[in-house]
Length: 133
Ligand code: HEM
Image 1 (cartoon, helix red, strand yellow):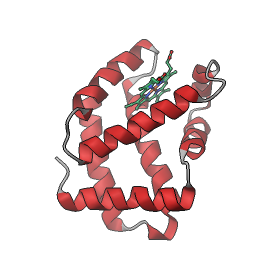
Image 2 (image 1 turned 180 degrees about the horizontal axis):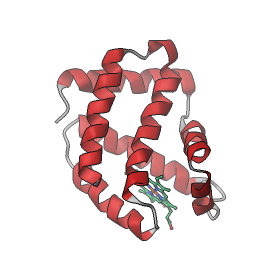
Image 3 (image 1 turned 45 degrees about the horizontal axis):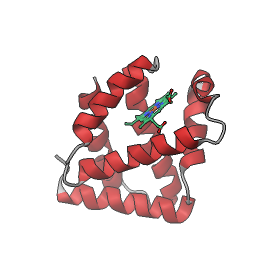
């Protein structure tokens, strides 16, 4: 359960990242493919980048749910982790995607990122790892 203080910190970081970085989609996938070049081949059919965009939008929605009222994301993330095994995405890679998103948000925040945001995000990432594994 995300504390109200952590919720504010994560929301603030997302606002700052959006103000500074605009659409974070290309930065997230550039970071993912820099780290794991072989994963890019999974998206060859995604010529209009619709799947990539939808996937990230759903990840952000899940993050907002996790730090908000927790209506669905915990179960949904578990289910998607299983679905992605069917796409041959290992659970560790699936969980890593959330970290890649967090690192992209951190970079987009630049000097506005602080230790409190770092801690709030690491608590969230820890929770996600527990749901996925
Ligand atoms: C490195 C990690 C990941 C990889 C390589 C990956 C890969 C993929 C691929 C290849 C598809 C298209 C599948 C198809 O239509 O045949 C897809 C779709 C999708 N992924 Fe991921 N995924 C990752 C992480 C995640 C995470 C963490 C979430 C959410 C928690 C997620 C949510 C989705 C959703 C909702 C779709 C359907 C999008 C759509 O086509 O409308 N993915 N993913």
